[in-house]
Image (cartoon, rainbow, N blue to C red; front, side, top):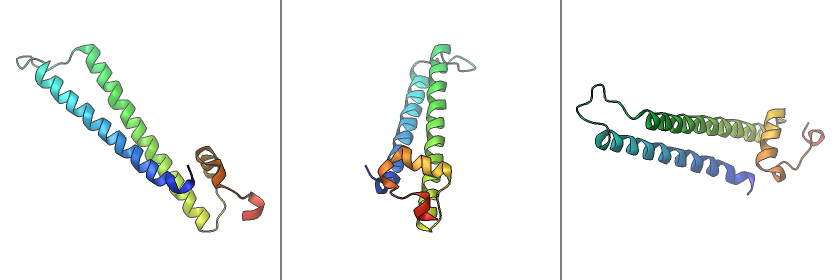
Length: 111
């Protein structure tokens, strides 16, 4: 995998998270219609199931936020490098974590 592939990878991950969130919403709707009684007010899910779905939604939200932040950091770093600027320490380590072969320069060679 090289550095040019990362934008499409981030896009694919975001799409996958969106698909998982949509599937969770569909399951929520099904459970609402088929498990929770229509005559129960307020409509309540079984406690264990509600906790599990809340954990699922929380995890998906966390992943979505984290991937968006990484994508933003990565894009900012690429634009800085293409603009002739040295990457920050955070940007350098992010790139090294994602694709160590992509940074074939040292601080001395860039600035």
